[in-house]
Image 1 (cartoon, rainbow, N blue to C red):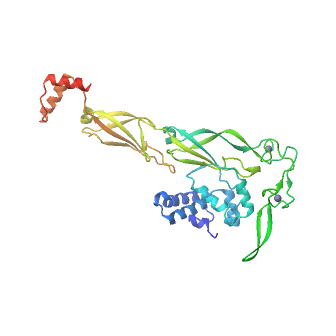
Image 2 (image 1 turned 45 degrees about the vertical axis):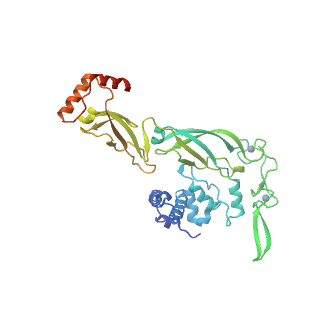
Image 3 (image 1 turned 60 degrees about the horizontal axis):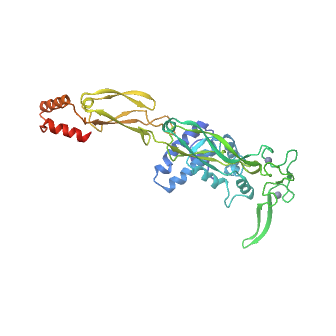
Length: 375
Ligand SMILES: [Zn+2]
Ligand SMILES: [Zn+2]
């Protein structure tokens, strides 16, 4: 694995966190699978770039990478990403591919990945405004948490774990095997201690030596501004606790956004249909409209046609990355009056004559009959 993460991101080895972040964002936009219609080469570069960024953005992982290269990261404790959320589930797969099981992984890292806590999933319903502006929410779920009684070590209070006699604490047992290619030494997880390197003579009664117990938990979830239904937040390290102090899994929060009574989302824009009478459409008007940011005025120009749209810039949905917001698109529908008083009808007929527009002459009797069938 000779890949140079700095070269992948196009930054120098002394790049600041900010430079690394900027370089990653730029590349991610270019290479994101959604932007490349399933181009396999772009997708695999996207994954490489994402891995490089996830490594270099974390000071500890970056330090290990600088000292040992990509191999310095494999199986090291605390490989779970920093608390924080990212979108999609692709990154986790990449990390698993690099750090988890796989033919090149040692038995030790295999043990680490199997002791790691399971990922947890939960559904979270939020309303339209929370999706637009972001929100702090809580989710409740039942999951394995670190056992308080033993602090996750698995040993009964006052006792300690002991070095495993079978593997002398290495967690591995080695076997010499004859194969077609000659003698091979294979290492596998020690069956007695399951690779932990320690045995627990007196297990903690609260967790039976697992170092974790199942509990109902409330977790805070920071929903970023601009999310949509179907988005999934990944919160690193907030899944189930690992076995006997191993790293925790991740929490996946699936978002469900309830619809707004008068706004419809379209990408980063919000659409709103506004009905106005034909007099305002013809003569123009200043009208108030409720936006997500409060009441605003819009100008309807004289002679506005039905279907005209007016854009309120920056009153739409915030982009997930960056500070821009979409627009609020107001679609004007001109309402034709349904029921006319006698005076209104006379005025409209006068208007029609003035504009030489032909309208059928109706007797009073027919008009009132029409009115009664429509109402
Ligand atoms: Zn315990
Ligand atoms: Zn052992």
